[in-house]
Amino acid sequence: MITDIARPKTVTEAVRAGSARGAAYLGGGTWLNSGVARNVTTLVSLEHLGLDFSHVEGDRCVIGAAATFQAIADSAHVPAGLRDAVRLTASRTLRNMVTLGGELGLAPRDSAVIPLLLALDAQVSLAGRKKPVPIRALLGEKKTDLILSVSIPARRAAAVRAVSRTSHSPKSLVVAVSGERVVASDCQGQTVFLEQVEKFDPRPDLHASAEYKRHMAGVLVADLRAALAKGDAR
Image (cartoon, helix red, strand yellow):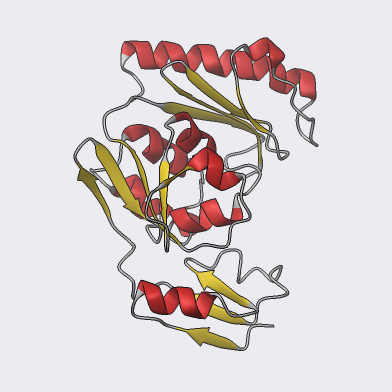
């Protein structure tokens, strides 16, 4: 049960508060307010840390961890591929709540954003670390550090597509492409880099068999590469 909320004014204060037993960082609160965070007793709000930004630094686009999906979708600084990925969360209400840092911290199985960030080899800045961490390494860690920002190449073309029963249903398949890099998620806990689509071995779910997911992965990769080649997806 949540009994307290801290509102730190600096990253140092936030890290100190977040290190306490039962504490969790609060961005949009879609997960923490859902009733499944049973062991959380203290919320550490990130509202005063100024992490809701997006801008271009040199050849990279940097997005604050507290930036909401809707803010990312509306930002002129964010490459089109990532804007498309956040729009795959069809509910505008949710897009106004879900934050980029929260998505990485929770890593939902049917995330469309994480495969896109993997395809772009995103770098993640964490409190207390001098150098950014490649997203692939971050996802393999036990996520306890405070995420500050995510950076991606500002001008590298990328595209993402998903398969789901309806626009608001859980996704059954997500595929992201950037250059020669292809990332596929079966939305059942398996996200892989593909050299050959035929070797994709997805797990089935209620709405899609493994065979269907494997077939659609090939279709989506071909469609995405064709769109990128024509400049229809950026």
